[in-house]
Image: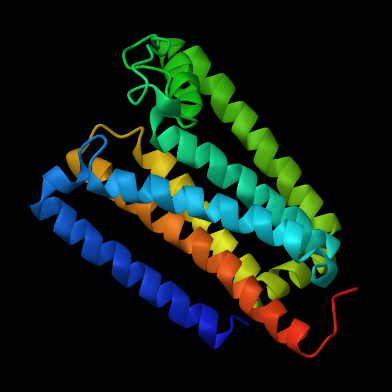
Length: 227
């Protein structure tokens, strides 16, 4: 079901993550706050945002409505990630960001998840039960929706697995979700892997947009814009 190109892309991405994790474990100074890896990741997200938004604007005649929406969403997400990586300019402009209960400053989008997790933890067993019940209800509702629209869901899954653009977006989102989860774990290795996933996801977002540009560039060469 998955295309050979996408399979090779997953293998290459996994190899890059493993390599960078190994290097980061040996050279921790590369992954410090505002270090070279975080700086490159921030630059990557900025490039991904500009690339996605400019593509949505300049190539709109060759894009489907779904592709335009995905590009705009990718541009907006990448912009938020860029601002999160530079702490919304707090250290650049010497701005004091709001303090979070339990420690740390609210200077990134992932801090929303941290605040939610801390509130659930501080609520004790009752909070855990409410969170578990809410998660269970959400998963049950999602499963019911997928069952009702299973044919459409399967068609979407087949399209994503065979498309370079959508597949790479899915990989990037999965890596970012993993990074947010790892941020909740008080572990040095988890912190290293989190930084590596964030850095690699910025490159994957750029490669997603360039894959679409490559496809649409071929279509434009033959003068057949998408309908």
